[in-house]
Length: 137
Image 1 (cartoon, helix red, strand yellow):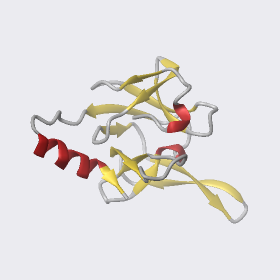
Image 2 (cartoon, one colour; image 1 turned 45 degrees about the horizontal axis):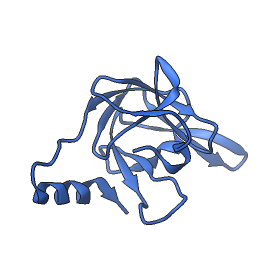
Image 3 (cartoon, one colour; image 1 turned 90 degrees about the vertical axis):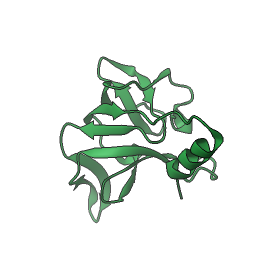
Image 4 (cartoon, one colour; image 1 turned 90 degrees about the horizontal axis):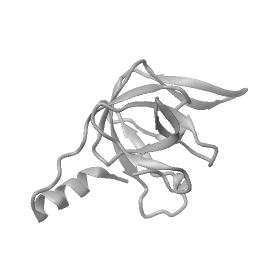
């Protein structure tokens, strides 16, 4: 999925092996773009696993302006959060320690690779279990 604020930006679904970069699309949010086409948002499904090239940098408000904090993990799973709430950011990453960070809070220019897409459910029970696991908060 791509956040609501990317609805007017050209987009395409993610594929395994995609080389991504975090990008500010000028719409009030950041998201992923393909490294070879930064004008097109790459939309991930909940449950998609990605690996970052370097330590993940997150923008943070500090006492005297903005700064950055780092996350000590290079892999994450894409999630959707706060889905019942309209007009807020929903795209997030869940890291191995359980920390969840909105995708829009990642600093621009970070590189990642799509490792794995979520499995397609084969029956109603699997679909329901996948939806429960994909939704956070």
